[in-house]
Image 1 (cartoon, helix red, strand yellow):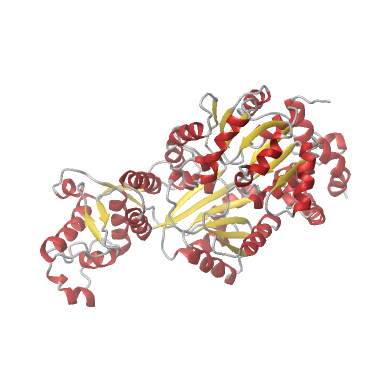
Image 2 (cartoon, rainbow, N blue to C red):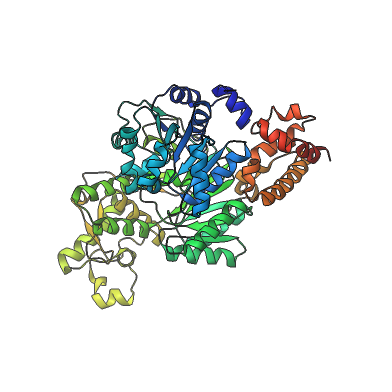
Length: 604
């Protein structure tokens, strides 16, 4: 019996109704149409190809970039009674042959394949001998050479249209500007496909950006105060920083693991497996980690280095709170981040157009960091979407002040000018601040900089205040990082207008640091766990049962049931199997497999 799309959603996946554009996308693909789908992480993208693959005759072919995560996706589908498999390099030849034979025999609903493998003649020949329901190209932003996660093998996927012109294709991603969207459509030959663009807003995520000052201590305090025992991801720019941060957190009682491309493949796989399968693990990683991670209970994503683009930042923070429960996106950044990023752009390979594009991406990221208005408004504006102030970001909850920084800017620009014009010298931020504040350091005495007319003219501002001024001047390209490789600072064409008093500069001033009360600092945590006492006890019993089942099946706990489903069961206290059928996430197969055990947990 062939089920309709809605019946498949309800019986297989256990959801009562579609969300947003899901139904329109699914019906379009079921009828044979191509589509480009933009939907935020946790918005239900996977259903947009899984349901058509179950409704249409044949096997849905899913192109996924990370073989390490295919296993979890296939495990989750098999728990639902879906005939799913994957082909990747982790299998021996016997396992691969069994999957190939099942595909050719029409015994699979979904087959996951990495793009590198799909483009081999062996795999293309295999696909030509089976019946294909659709092609789903997941993480489609990887095709964009201007994107944050370009993968050259994705460029070859245009051949799917050439070899199977009658098979519908979906390209899906959580992150793409209008320019990236056009590039995806062009490179994948989806020129005539409709674009389904959902809202990029993730209202359950609280965005917070702070000024960096002893960042490891700041990070530890954040985790201990707001997310103790929670699962989280911490992003660092370098491999060394990953190792140092993971070690520091472990030394302070946080269960943290490192992940970067320099680690042995077996270590990476083991750490990723622990993160996915164990409760409360924290992964410290470079951006090599995270694409395709579908762990729903990541309660925070932290960045201790400045991301290179808003697209990358959005993609990475989107891995928090996939279950719809409250989560935090926390970023610490400072002056040195700006200096480092500017220098990396200047020293990058590529032509002037390429460097200008990188510079524009960084400018947008700096604009998000320095805004005095709602961060979510600024973030979504990057993707051409508008909202009202969100009330769930730091600038909404504790609005920063704007102050006239024109004179302060003129002082520091004058110091840079005097050093270069009078002495032929350039220096970095720390030395400039010492000159302005009138500090008689050994270096200042060595160079005779205490005789400069600008020496001591900035004693009215603290060192941190001057670092904030410098950071914002760099963010607005009113100062530049010199090409000497030492991080020294130089004037730009735009500096002249400020020095001549032609522009007024309004800067962001951080709100006064208040000692956060326990109740304020744990708001997001309490919002997640706030259950009545009896329901909380049932929830913990259900979690313990789920952990045991997951261990016996060799899968992550969330593959059995999401926390959100267990919370609903704990709250509603179902009396019968029929009652369980009305709970989101409990489909027919799971009700049959686990229904009696769930009722036993609830009623003892």
